[in-house]
Amino acid sequence: MKNLLSTALFVLFFSLAFQVQAQTPQFPIVKGFGGIYEIPDATERPDGTLEYKILVDLTSPSEDNKQISRFVDNVARMMNLHGLAGVTKDRLKVKVILHGGGIFALLNDENYKKRFEVENPNLKVFEALKAAGADVMVCGQSLIARNLKTSDLWPGVRVAHSALTTITTYVPQGYILLKF
Image (cartoon, rainbow, N blue to C red; front, top):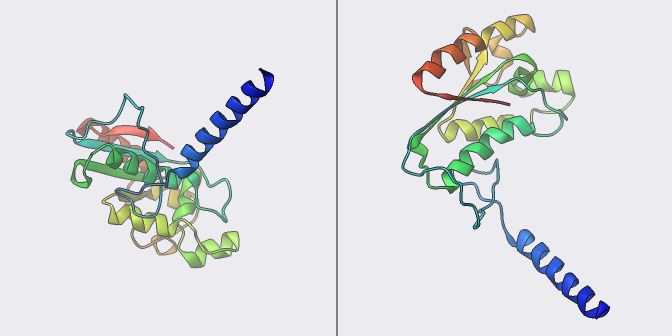
């Protein structure tokens, strides 16, 4: 009986492990970044018929500056999760405002390398986010506080007057605020 139970548990464990490993990450909206997985048992999903307006307030610095910031990649994941549920790119309005310690993820390769001794791994993610329709902005006040100029940054970013006023501008327009 003990052997039968052990064998059954062994088979169950490896069949579950195989099912998890068998899935390949998907990138329905942001190509190559923010990989996500289908969850067949999910009963709570985004409504593919709605328009989603999302403002991401990204202040968290990278945990490892030699790797893609999980906070930047999480923007791509969020967009891809909506896409996997049937929300089309034209119904997904995403704005990202970086400020505080998060702005260093926007440094161009030259300035990132001076600061962290590697090229900026986040720039490819920002390019993919922009190609997917995300509007990436940086807080002008944070730039001044950190003695940075627009020319120090990835050229695809827009400079906002401030993160605070960006939030107070878009939330009344129906954007939901997510904090990363």
